[in-house]
Amino acid sequence: MSAKTILIIGGGVIGLSIAYYAMRAGYHVTIVERGAPDHDACSLGNAGMIVPSHFVPLAAPSIVAYGLRAMWNPESPFYIRPRLSRDLLDWGWKFMRAATAAWVDRAAPLLRDLSLASRRCFVELADEWGNTFSLVQKGSLMLCKTEHALHEESGTVERANRLGVPAQVLTPEETARLEPNLTMDIAGAVYFPKDCHLSPQHFVAELTRLLMDGSAQFHWRTEVVGWRAHERRIESVRTDKGALQADEYVIAGGAWSPRIAHGLRAYLPMQAGKGYSLTLRHPKQMPEICAILAEARVAVTPMPLDSALRFGGTMEIAGLDESINSARVRGIINAVPQYLPAFAPGDFRDVPVWRGLRPVSPDGLPYVGRLRSYNNLSVATGHAMLGLSLGPVTGELMAQVLSGAQPAIDMMLLDPDRFV
Ligand SMILES: Cc1cc2nc3c(=O)[nH]c(=O)nc-3n(C[C@H](O)[C@H](O)[C@H](O)COP(=O)(O)OP(=O)(O)OC[C@H]3O[C@@H](n4cnc5c(N)ncnc54)[C@H](O)[C@@H]3O)c2cc1C
Image 1: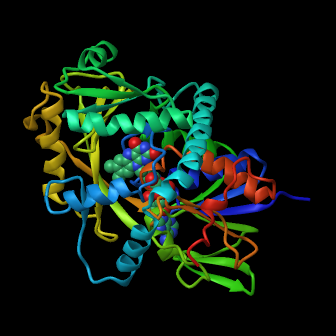
Image 2 (image 1 turned 120 degrees about the horizontal axis):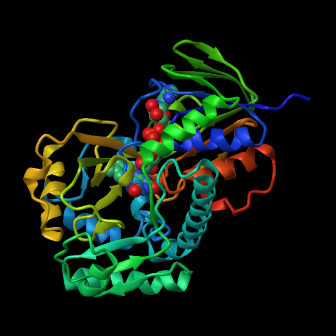
């Protein structure tokens, strides 16, 4: 009997990871991507952090409190553009309902398990591929400018240790000993030794190359525009280049996934969370450990393969709008010298601004698994700030789902029909 054919929509880190693990499991894989082979997507210019430390879902009381404070400042890292949109109101209502302490307690162990399993996959892939994407296993630092932030982060440390994610509060001197290459003006830091970082563009390029060199088939510059379904079965997917058929279909279109699923019996509440990054080539100082500037919510990631240092941040809920909001970008640039005084806003002059749309579900967990209304349709999206971190584990789990095997991690909370 010939192997099942799997058609995956979306060539971001999620779609490619599913394709990679499904190919390894022996399936015939086809990837349909509306962009060219060198297309940009959220998966490329992100901060490259692999973060078991991020076990608190986005839908949390602390995020609601922070968001309400930050919303009124045009340079703040969090913003919801007010719009008369039914989807936004529906998403906002679901977000507020989900953001409870009880939900954080339920979701945190799952996020921890997913992140640690994905970290294990990254280590295995780095070993197998010769670390072509420069995985650095040195942890991450949450740099706090103020005592107040350090005190707040200390609460996370206790919780992290209780969950089995090692974390430690450091004085400025201890932080400097750990990261001697960087001048820091901080009240202290939290160190998460299990976090890692990598070059996302090299990881995505390597996945694509291995798939192309293997048995996978790519349909580049091909946009999915609709579906043909009969009762509980998807018969084909319609694209702007004609219909394509497979045994199984997986929607992994990032922030565009609800649009791709239009016309199907599927309900995937989602907002695009726009973020920006700026990458300095040959920066004045090159840290070894990735960091987050805590109050400013700016990620700082060394990318040694390109002798580059990337600064990324902001979460702007403004629809599927890819325009660049210069006030938010200024917020990132102005925050950097407050923590890292060797850098100045002038360092970012003429540095191109990258933007990406994160797929953000209202409860802070991705949608991964089969849709109930069809026998041969699955979804893997909504990973928000964790899409790179959770790419490989999503690929591994989806390969298990597609084979009918019992997934290694309980996926009940990831059910893509949970809001139906
Ligand atoms: C500033 C910033 C920093 C970040 N930092 C991190 C980090 O440090 N760690 C981390 O884990 N995550 C991080 N993220 C989040 C992460 O980048 C995303 O969660 C992840 O890239 C989502 O991947 P995806 O494959 O779901 O979506 P995408 O990368 O957006 O891929 C979706 C693909 O689907 C294609 N597509 C859409 N519609 C169609 C269609 N109709 N037909 C065919 N193809 C279609 C698109 O062209 C695209 O290539 C960051 C994000 C931002 C913005």
